[in-house]
Length: 112
Image 1: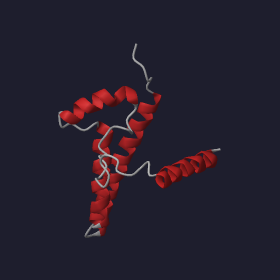
Image 2: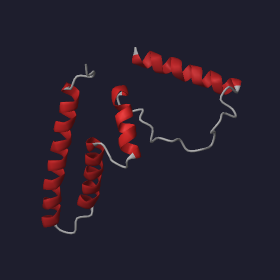
Image 3: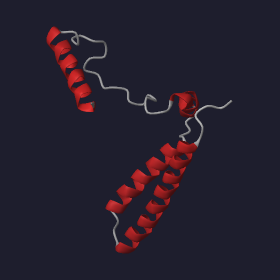
Image 4: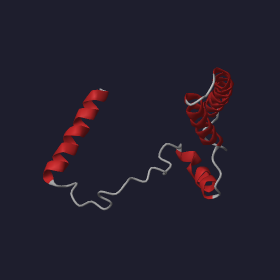
């Protein structure tokens, strides 16, 4: 079923390209602004927007950045001892992130 939907979408896109429907669109040739909250559940978008404007990251994004930084540091670790220390920190951050995500999945979507 999923493949059929992708094929239909691809065919519609191809038709639009051939018909020129996608020519001269506003923003053509400019980079996409991916800092929008398309990945954030709708009920959390206002909160995330306020946090972003205040320069505060949600905890999961902060953890994701910390994990990425630790992975970079681990790849460049000068010694086995340092690599071991970084692996322990990385495991701790990943566990914290996984626990946080599990809690978010179990949280009710609506507050009454």
